[in-house]
Length: 168
Image (cartoon, rainbow, N blue to C red; front, side, top):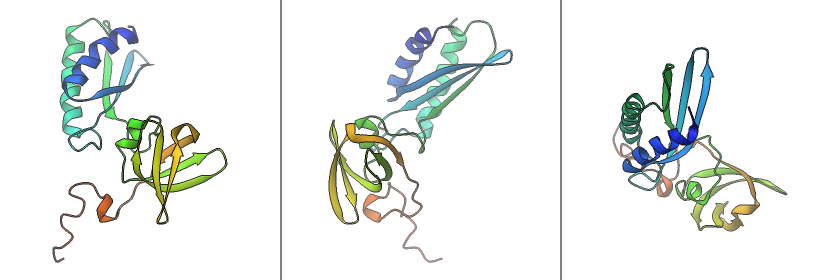
């Protein structure tokens, strides 16, 4: 089984679903193999893929794998998932998909937590304690989204504050 053959099989299916391949790993586990596919994409509001889209793509990938010899005859387990909230932001598209979210950054001289306001191909604009700061993406050693249970309304995802005005 070659990863390039698997990639050629998987990428068109993901593209048709509006998803992109983030990583593909094949790990032997006893007599079986684990085929772990991580996907990403803009989704309907530019904030990442929907679980329903990932699930549908997973079923199509499974059917395509069963119909091909890309995985050979040995049994395998297919796992398809999104990058996840803890995945480091490594490309401008990752920052763009997380606009409005709180992120913990490691720079050469400091670490900071800020909100992603905007991003270009090579610079991220951050909100830090009411001020704005631009940082070249090349200066960021590591960036990880922080989970916020109650983000400010202007940065909330659609549906986050739907029940806020209802009485308890």
